Every structure is written in C-alpha cells, then in structure tokens.
Length: 409
Image (cartoon, rainbow, N blue to C red; front, side):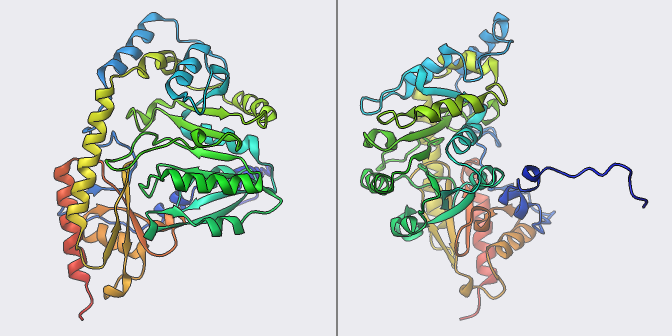
C-alpha cells in the first residue's frame, strides 16, 4: 500500500486513554455453549433484565418536562439553580451542610469523577486508587498523564483498605486519595471507625479525598452507609454521586459533585471544577429539569429496591457457599460480590481469566475476572441483579463446572 500523502498522528491523550476492562474483555476467548442459555453476571447495569424498575413518579417527572417545552435548551454548564438546590437538599447533613453553590451537575457519575480528578491533579502528579477498584478511575487519570498508584483492599477484612500500604504510596507528588464506598467491585460498606481511620491518613498527609458514593445508601441489613464528609471538619472532600444506581437509570446520565469545603481549602478547586464543566456544558437538560421531582420519589421505592437486592445477595450466599475451590467474600451492600478461586483445587484452571473463559465456554455463564479491577490473586466479580431464577441456574452451573474441574485428591 502506497504511503498516504496525509501523515496524521493521533494525539498523546487519545493514545494513553484505555479502559483496563475493555483491554481484557475484548481479548477474552469466550464462545458460549450453544446448548445452554447465555447468562451474564458481568454487567453492572440494574436495568439489563427488566426486574429492577424506577418509580412511576420519576417517569411522570420527565414526561411533564418533555411536554412543557421548557427544558429543551442549554442549561448552565454546572446545572440549573433548581436542580442543584434539589441535590443539595437531598444530600445535605447537619455535619456536612450543602447549598446549591456546593453542587456541580455532571453527565453521570463518571463525568463527575473526571471533573474531580481533572481539578485536583496535574500531569506528573499521582493519585491513590483502590485495588480492586472501578477501572474507569485509572482511565480518567492516566489519560491526563496522572500516575495511578493502587492501594490494597483486604478480602479477609471485608475489603477494608490496607492503611499501612496506602501510606507507603504517598509522596510529595500525591494529589488525592480516591475512596469508593459502597464498593464496586467488592460490595463492601465501610464502618464508621474505618472511615475515621482513612480520614486520619488524609489529615496526616494533608490530602483531599475524592469519595465515589454512587452507591450511597445501598447498604444491607446490619450495615450502615455513612457519607465520609459527615465525619470530618478538616479534610477537604469532593463527593461524587448520581441517579444511575439508586434510581435505576444509568442511561439518563445525570451525576454530581458535592464540594465539602473545609475552611476554604477548596476555593480554587471550585473554580477549576466550574471551568472543566464548560467542556461539555453539563448533563441532559430534560432529566436535570425533572431532578427536583425525581429526588422526591417515595421512600418505599428505594426500600423495595434494597429488599430485592438483599434477597438476591442472600440467595447468592446460600447457593455459592460450599462450592469446591471457591471462597466468596459476601457483600454488605451495592450489587456485586467477589469470589476467590483456589486454583490449587482444580486440575486445569490456571488463573481467573482461564476460569472465566472455560466457564463461559462450557456453561454459558459470564463473569468478569478480577484482573479487570487490578485485583491481586485470582478472583471473579459477580453482579447479582439478574432475576432469582436466572441466578439459581447460573450458580448451579458454576457448581457443576467447579466439581467437574476438581483435581483428584
């Protein structure tokens, strides 16, 4: 092929932008068994199977705005005053008060995270991220030339942060600590004491925290979700959240940044967040116009969603317990659980990738390998939002697969 007269090179940013999940999943050698119905336990989207639905009042709120013809134009890049005031009212707390001036709307929580990382860190600095953790954190930071340093979560302690390891990663170029609670992919919900211990590290090293709370309030019986911002009066906190998970509408693309400004420490960061919000001019105008009404959805809607999620989590615990070669770490909230694979128990399973590929090929059940989340050791992540009958089938197949591949004792 002759050289083209145009010599066009891609930008540096575009070439260093990659999602670790895509890099692994796109190369998975997955050929599901055509004789068995394919069941995916891989996608963190509660709408996939149609068994989780948002409340009718939320639909009515959007319909009303659509028919008003008043929500079709450009809103301010940080969001309308009414929408920001509604978010502030919904998430304010006596220990961490918010006004509309402390809220910046974004195109989903992922965009909110992008704003926070972009406002706090420069190229050449580093940011501390959880491992295992949501892969997009790494994508957002590395594309900006920010070094990602991964602190360990401890499976034997319900995925609490290894604080000693966290501290070893801090240096003069560290810009922020990112904390995800409740967690994707772990399904952990941190205790008050653990959150205080995390804050003590941030206080000691004078580091702000980005708190990803997209799964806020999604804690199971016996566990309590506490916004980390309510436990400090000194550590600066940027909290990200959105409608995606709690309100079961990830495709509506409305998220937010909550600025918990400790003693004016974030005054310049606020300006940076506003500047960055002007890159894409804010989230969907229709949904943010409906936001004040969406956030008033009845408490019973949220309670029913959590009852359904917890029922699925309990069924997962019942059906996964005792499967040879697997050690589940059962969730405390959100919609995920991690399962450790003891490869020494199997005759021909090399690692988590190998497990996932062979499970899909033989049993038509797809999970994600822990490598997608920079998990140390061999783990798989299970999303337990499918209907109970599908979970029952999927877990039965996983049991059969593990029993079939067991090494002879």
